[in-house]
Image (cartoon, rainbow, N blue to C red):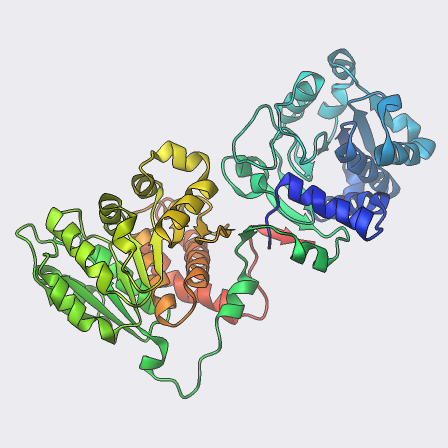
Length: 530
């Protein structure tokens, strides 16, 4: 599913109206109808609710007026607080004001300024539910005057709020909070989600998101030149073929995990176990010799290769030749968790990379080593490269700082993907996956309980196993982060977010894969479709 900017959505809207002849009034009618449908599903019985719809003067307000009309026709007591004079309305908003005005004129209260708003503020407090139809997705400056005051009053009322298209006061094109904004319990947007709906911190104020179909033809959306999308279970199922009944363990790839050091053997164990849960036919761990017993006992199904080590118990530079001699046996490599940035180990990474001719997933200290070596270190690597940094590691890769990365996560991921010529997985709340051509996919699965040691190591192994099985690197990264997050959600449902560990997530992975890949219907997701 594509994620649109305000301008991209406006272009789709304009093409539907001007190019395809779909009346704008019909689109507005469908928008209002869909919002009422969501309200009726969430707040039962509808007739027992007193609703106040707060409308601006533009098209978002027009949507709100449609909502009010349908609610009244359904027998739901509804009032409208219009933050405008009726004579200032125009176009479709005016038409819907007139449609509502004829039979129900006494339900509309005009509040074009703060003084008038103060006179009608009691309606908000006397309601059971508020509908926010003040600003749509075109807002790009902070709300001010009576608009800002209306937003403050709505939030202060303590009533549940349903936002039409976007919580008023948020800018559709950025996760940054630009000013006073609605704290919605749910949001109904139209056609496609927008960036502010899915990226934090703005997504914190969206509540449950419903993406409603209001009549844009599928072909119109399909041809829209949009490079940002949501990762959906439907697309993941397309990437996984059913297993061949005559398959054997060699059919599903052989992953080499180069990982670990003294005191960090667990990173390698978790990566190996993540790879095995991801369906790789074979997994081999190449580790510093002294931690081999810990890795073998921690992941019994994985084979091992003992490597020369430094006095500190990290992989020594001389291990390059040992690993290079074995590389022809593997269909993918996972490199980095628990390696440390010991100078000799960094040199090992530098000289191993040119020998790799299969997809390689580089995580953790592999990313930290690469940050020291620079993007030229990947120039001779023959296989596709997947980088899976957390924000701090991403900052080092870009020579930036964590705050700058978090301020615009999509831009950071795109820049790193283009600079390093790699698929980039920027981990965190709403993990993003970018490719060197500028495509970016946003993942909505996962929860704060996954902010726990070892969880990222599981992801490294999982993505590595998908690459080893022959799934394209961009698709493997998207599938990996979705399944990883979904497993985290299942684990949190059992253990709670506070107590969740990487081992809990590993145990939930089979169910996550089964629900997502094998089930004929998708599991419930963070975005509802209507």
